[in-house]
Length: 240
Image (cartoon, rainbow, N blue to C red):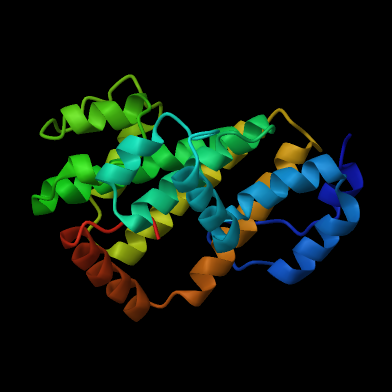
């Protein structure tokens, strides 16, 4: 099913501009326009706000061997509570029936793991307790922390751009550049899916980023950075 009328009626986005529509209005429009299958894909993208579902999964895996994923025992013994919930979120997203959603969660897991590895190397933290997941990028980061490119050359297509961003000291600027990378990824991933659900979901994610930045002041950005470093010292997740 195509979404020609929906997508052509949405206001144009700019990575350096303000969100042209409120999240509430956008979700209302999507609820009225998307079929149930595509609404389910949207719900998976909203999982980061669904603490109840994530907690339910955690309790399910703790209480029963049935349906428990292979990575669970390692994660529960190695990760902090917050990092464990983050891995639950990633793994849940990567099981979506929608290919775009699976790729989005996988991309963000790799991107965030590179950022975490950079902070671990800079501050001397234990990377083995901070990297989330066991895919190719995660395993390479655990083994090659001292290498300048973490041994990821040829593995991540946009590694030079990511490494340029991680060198930015100002947290707010760095986070905005990371979101710019996400914008580019979304545009490239949906380039040949005109009027598809992929374009609808990408628009939602881009609006979400623009709204987040409209609320974050310089002072808040500095506060977040201090909290991130403090959390790393306690073994807490960096992907909040």
